[in-house]
Length: 195
Image (cartoon, rainbow, N blue to C red; front, side, top):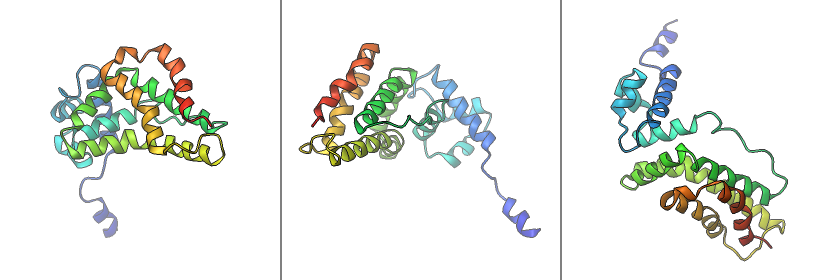
């Protein structure tokens, strides 16, 4: 009995509070930019103390990244692909859809803000860039092994060549992340890998 009481001491993580913080963050992002968003505003909207937020997240970037990741549909796995080419095409399609939305502007603002902080940049890379890049790199490597893709291209450079133009449009010409780009980009970009 004493062990149980001891285990309950302190403040356990409350999923209700966590959910309130993530929901509040997403709602606030509909009305304000990442730069204008504050931990104070999130805490007030979620009806929690700032210390509750800082107990779970090191900074605002981490809260926003977690909020984005927990939006409906963000964690939905992609269907099983019939080839590594199709797997990469699905990843690129998913990325374009993500960036051609309100979330795209949030991601652009996060990327901009992360440049001023090593911690924020690491959170941005770990939560958005690395999972995407790793999935595409894996498909390139496996496609090279089975002869689907050419052997003479470095995996890391190929990932940059496939994803770079999408992020460039997000940062420089977001209006060009449109249906036409979405419908044609992946097939055109994948030609760089074709054996």
